[in-house]
Length: 389
Image (tube, rainbow, N blue to C red):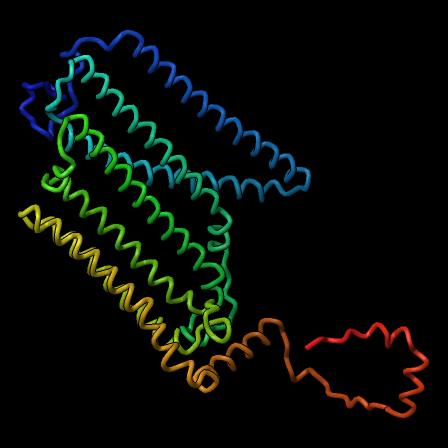
């Protein structure tokens, strides 16, 4: 029995089966599909109406405050981000599902009737469409929720103050970093979800065909898709390491908040190394596409990923911990002194604590008649808190 017409001559990469060559679906199946599609349509209508209800309520409130222009800016930005997220996520997940379906669909080793084959085919296609739509909507909504971050970035103004570690204007950390983190996290999440769901599509179709999942490692098209997804994931990981370099200014692991001795001498260089290694690992995964031997190709993909894991363990965890333990802890005050001074200086700057404006006045203590004062104020004396050591 075949999951596609035997006269197609296309093999595993052939087109979807011609449903006209098979018998009709079992009784009641079409009705079930219609009910499912109707329920999905009602759910989509409910989501749309709920969004419109919230948007209309917000519009009334902003209009009452005579801030309609603010509402329009917010709404246009959210719609823009939703469209960008929908197109990007839809193209990525749609192409991945389409490629997985075209690559894995073929003859089955199981004794399925033609009617069951058609039902399986329709079920898989419908499932991919529903799951793809849910993923697309979820990622588009998540991106639209970051509208304020985008507006702050677009309207950013320099602070005129440069950080002493990297030489960036403070505006970079206030406005640019949130946008970069949003892009990095959104792309990484999309790649991971796409990879997991695409793998599920492969396993589902291969199981329906009665084939072993190990076929996934031998088909060149599947290995190519896996290598590309892995390389894309490593690119987002490299991006994350790059952003973590600047996040050291917000670290609270040292003696004070900010980059301290272990961060500057060990963690920041290690993050630069991890950024390069992640890019190299992604390049090795792409190179694995050109390797003809399936086992060697898959081995190269896993070796590339393992290279990054080992580097992340040593350079990202062990090396900074060793520097902290062996170089900082024995003489912490000496090592951390310049960073503590920098922290104090920037704390004063942040809270506008200019010591030049502080005036010193002597406070004269009069200890004459102290016993008489104590006896005259018993309520005050009795309410003095005594700390128990």
